Length: 343
Image 1: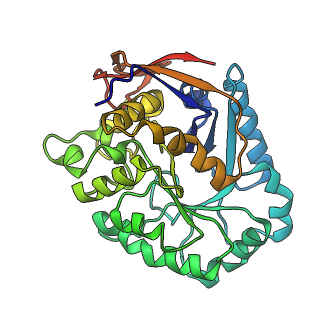
Image 2: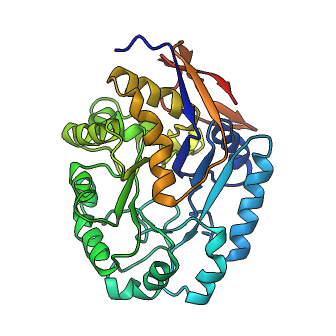
Image 3: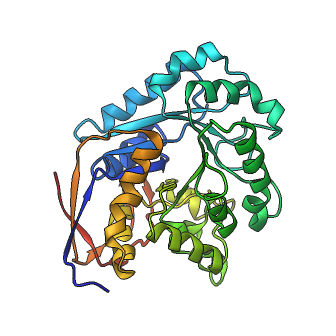
């Protein structure tokens, strides 16, 4: 534990974020835009974003909600096998990446890819490779839930080999097996969430079920968490912070058929500071939450300085909108760092 009482983060970036749409966007958008310089926004709306018109319209809605903050939403397109080179060339400057979802594997992914065969995916991936458009992947099979990410690793390897000039980002990795891939293939990168640095499956279902910690990919074993945390604390240059903050109304979390997603946007920077300080690694936090992503995605983010202070903060029990509420991670609990100022 250090004796540091204040800490500055510069241009923090959330490289995997769900902002949803409509009233939910109105609630959660400012909870990110206030403290982050930018965020990579997921395209799995209903329907998913697959056209330039849909993309630009969504960006306009985000900007309208977050207009009071110095914030840049980095938009993504929902992967399809048949995007033409001409279409991708036209939309290239409006997106930061294309997100691939295996069909039905997570929230709003029913129209995702039904086959992960390299040849099936080749038409779009070859065009992306030529145009320099990164590929983000939700890397899970439909096998046994604890093994889904591990079973997907041969697919990551096949894609990395088949398309060596394509930047491939393994999204929200949860296993030590995925960590090992970072140094095996030059074109493989990854994001990791806040909650996967903290929890294991035992926190979700080891005692009374905690629906607000249920997510996909599901939290794994202690040894997986340890590998993720160790790599994040060292600020491995191919690993970035991506919250995968995924808000759902309280009634959809505390119900039969619990929706998958952990809502962390309001507390992400405070808790990351707490974790890195506890392990004596605060010098690496700016790399993990900003500099690594800038290099991987060739970004020049908007200027923003967040000053945090070592002062207790009580996490709100819920964030309300109209007749709904969204429950954050650490709801009602005390964390040891607070945001002092935003410049």
